Image 1 (tube, rainbow, N blue to C red):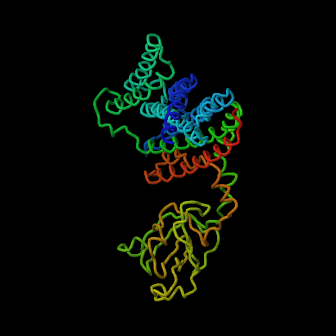
Image 2: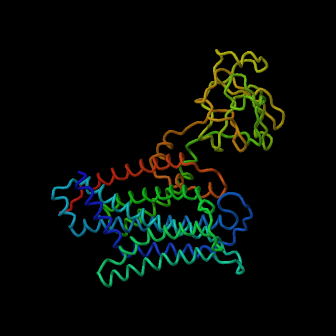
Length: 452
């Protein structure tokens, strides 16, 4: 199977790179990133924390959106070109009659298209990173970042010039050669920009490197590959225009799935937001031992009255999803009897023992373990009195449909919320699962397709 898969993937990759629209959309994305440095100076941002600040936050948002839309359209066009058109022209018949299994053909075509889309997306991301390094031109008096302009435009021009030269003298395909050269040239241009500041002085590459934006871009690439798999599935039955339409509809619905479905999955009204949380004993700040006490201060008065003895739940989401403490039975003991909390026979519970306006006293009862409390309560967490209820049918529908918001982390970068590599790995695994589902659907649709 591998001997059949690799030639099919290579052929799909070459066919994708040779499409004129492939090079056109990459260059259009690069041009729009230049234009974005002029038209995003109206966010009136003033914060100076994180990898982007001020107007550059809007530049990042619009720049990532530009890549997302351009790559989505590109995936739809390319998937149709390498599969739907072959089915329509009957050329696919020469492949499946070798014999080559139809699942092998679908997987090979997807791998080739995915490789091409990844190349295009990486080049687009490099254009965005160059724009981020340059920054927004808030006024006409702002200085240009000449290393960004010279290396960026220079790498693009050199790739196009060499591709034109090779096409004229050796008859090499111009779009394929240009895209193949753009990838190393633009990566090289960005590396040089990292090593040279706007005053042409050498600097450490780590100074202008944006690890959070890089991780967010990695998640974006995964989202585009999910859309590529959906485009591959659609192209097994549809022509180019319907395939593009399906991709646009799925793209829009996947961005809105949280609103239409996700908000109905978890139900749990919060009673307040934590303003400050501290352990009663500085030596026991992990909230891991029976009897440990935390003093909680809310930002405002509780939404509803909180009686002593109520259960205490907390988490980062206002709807109760991703709760940071596992479900436990209500505490039935006496909140004034300290011995009950440290008794190993007492079931685990987090109990609100005292309420004074916005101040809560919370104690841990019974045996506490890392698997029960993921971390202690912290500023910004939401407080709940009951475990979260899950709407199972809505949860199943929400999980089955692609959710592009799971790959979109521009807001996290703009708000300086750390995006770890471990979380990115979970996002990648989610994307792989969505790709497998889409490819299975593509194989099912193609198995019964008449290609003769």
